[in-house]
Length: 32
Image (tube, rainbow, N blue to C red; front, side, top):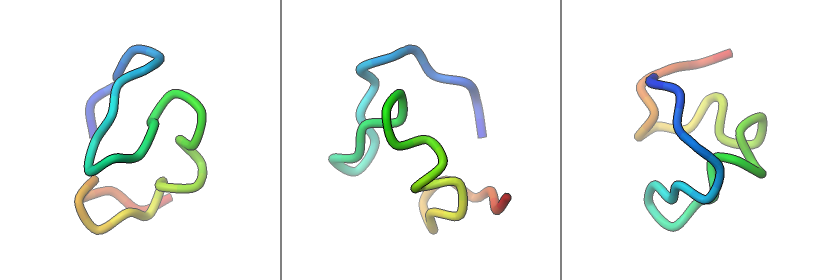
């Protein structure tokens, strides 16, 4: 998973604020 700037949205999820919440997100292709 590439590092993304604050405010970047993937699948409607805010990476900047919820990075840990989606650390194991299916679309991220990364777990942990």
